[in-house]
Image (cartoon, rainbow over all chains, first blue to last red):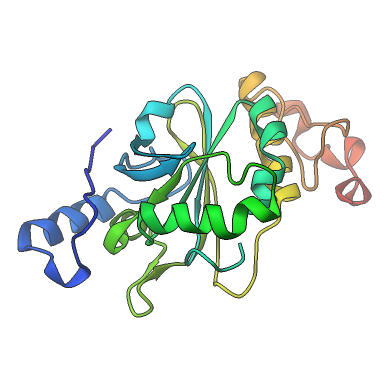
Length: 75
Length: 151
């Protein structure tokens, strides 16, 4: 499983060529049913704390990965 | 989000963890939790609220809308081996259905438990008949399954 580490605080416009390449390669890995879910690590708010969450830490469990447009919107 | 949170205990019984993801920072997640979510569901959202700064994770998963700068409503069911079993993607104005999420997870768990010996036909829910794929079922589905079983 490939790992990508996402740091907060980087703006969308400030991607380096390497970063763009990284994203492109990750997309090439193609997200589709039957394929491995691309791993990621990112900051999260969980149980009152700020902590890093890594998708692959949940191997062995079912995971519902839920994207939504933004906080303070209905989901 | 709170609809999923309200059913979190039931999801846990099915060995499910939930990760919610938006482009907001973890700090904004905290404020949302404190100011609003905790008033909609007791204790607030009990699962990790992930910050996807700049939509990088969303880009990889094909749900990042670059023009709007947000992730659209994408939902992925990932099995214990890390394999994506289901994808549902909606534009922002329409919310998802937690009951359907449950149904799909229950169906995928059944398939996994039986190692594919049993499959879940359209509209399957626990208690309804499954199908057992094999040469003898070919052309004979009509004998064991009718469309009204889907509803």
